[in-house]
Length: 321
Image 1 (cartoon, rainbow, N blue to C red):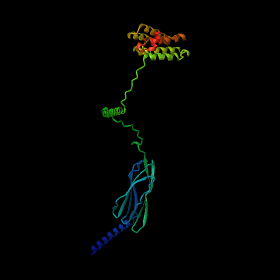
Image 2: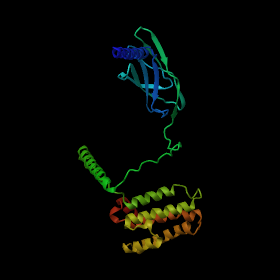
Image 3: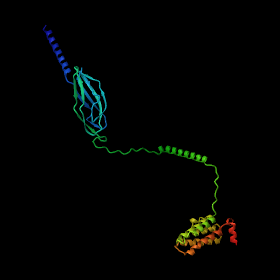
Image 4: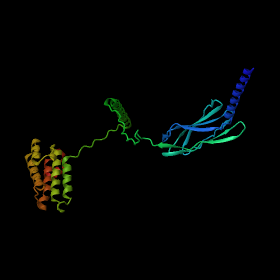
């Protein structure tokens, strides 16, 4: 009888302890804690922030739609599944935040509301925290890394050859199409070929222009002699096919001999070219009447060496008379 009484006392004591523990669990105030993955982040990089509320089983956590975390920015927010811990429950929200300012930034206090079974609301707030935001481009020692040079692209002639070949084919095709188009567009018209003027006509006309130029009256004696020499050398090229403009006076005379020119014409050429060379190269300055005689001498030389078939009939009759 006495044992049964002792058992009842023990059971009652255990039951009383359980009731006290349960009541204590139900009456303990809720708690709010936060956990940040890192207290130092890189500017623009996301970091995870977990907000956890420990509360009674019959209590309810009212999460804000958006946490005010300025100067940080909220990237994402999601509620985690509640976790039971004995007579209490742990409710958590996971936030992904970032910052675009440098330095030590203050993470503001976060507020959460908890409502118990009786409808009483309790507002909880965390303590403010300091988070360091660093710039990108730092090495492990905290120094800014040097700027890397541009990457080199490997070059090989073998890889370039197909491109060059392709460009060559395209260029050839474009040229062929252009020629074909021009051939179709160009009318088949026979353009008349204008025969070159006879050498004696060009020489006589040039001598007349020089005689009327007035160079001697202007004191341009050297220019006058150079013009006479050039006119007669051009005549020698057109009449006797001697490259006189590229030759010395001696070479011009030798060329005339090889063509079979008469000795009288060669002597006149020598006299005229020698007189011009004295002024051009020896700085000889003859008087105006002596210089003016060069044009008649050149005209006589041209008329004397003009082929008979090219002399107009009127000029031949005047020469005979």
